[in-house]
Image (cartoon, rainbow, N blue to C red; front, side):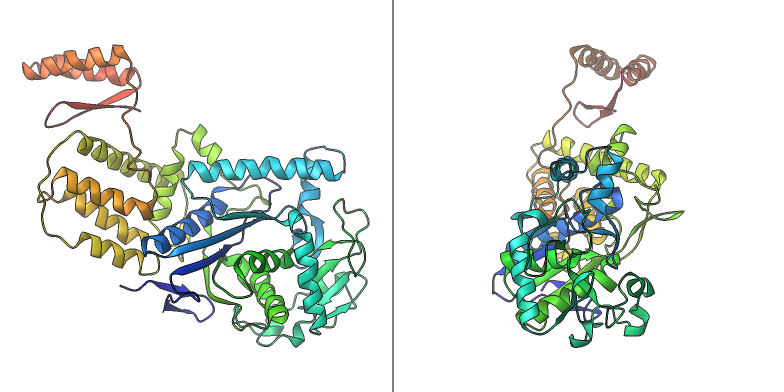
Length: 464
């Protein structure tokens, strides 16, 4: 079955046909590293990881880039407010220097990368930091200016959206509905309220500034993604991902400036957007203080992969209503899955049966990354009495190349000698059908932080 992806640009599922046969080029909007990433942010990178793994599963080579925003992202997408990195320096009570900014950026970048590793998110070919690509941004802006899409105001160099063909084609909104009055208030010289800054020169107190043909300043937020994606993936590439919040402004502006610079239409063939993870109170938001981080979940006793399993249960184009109760349910199911895999590893049954599971799994993930259906195929394999343990493991490991639940790497917890001795006594009691003693010893094992599961042959001990 051919891989089908839902393209935000056309609002329909399309067969994936890469520009270069056999290779998929993929760019994802990465984090602004001014604070810890919350689990809503991390859900997006899990989605992108599933996409990358699915492309690889379809025997495609993948060239993958994710940016790290460490300058230029103002607190409003409409070119106003304070740079989020400068806001972080104040919060951390550091001196207003470029060294402080980079110190903060690396701190939260390291935290993000650590969370990504815990969630078994594969690294892209390139993590591209904005501050390391300023020359690339300036060069791209020069192309846009040369092609006649810019004008100057007191704010800096501005992109003229009226010259962009089909400016609203991604958001599918009327231009008048996209006009932000606040943009005009910030810069009354702008020709159109939807126009945006490519290079900002009117903020002398901004810590990070560079010389440019338009004066000393710093890049607008949108230009970094266009510059870095074109540097590593070319003037036209296959897939661009992000969150639903990126559609009306950030990704719309990326398309406008990139097509103005390179003349390729479409600049990106497939746009994939993940919907928000939400709480009962609404969208998870750092600015509103309504957040959970991976570290906070760990402190509550959850494995980060419990959260990954929860994300797999909901399609990326559906909002995920998060609660600790839903995470508890996912944890129990994932724990059961791990125990089954560990039990299968102890067996040597190698019987085989004809089945369609590989085909069913591929059809599931190739149907716009339907991970919940893919999980149901995995569980069908594990429940199938006609399959031997070896074949079940082989299929589970194969499917996990996409699911990313670290099933092959699972090992039994290192069990203390004391617990093993109690377990052996309990096994002896069970053999002798001394059920009261067996139950008492099971409770003793539980009181010491372990749980024991009886198998057809022997038992399995895990730490709680």
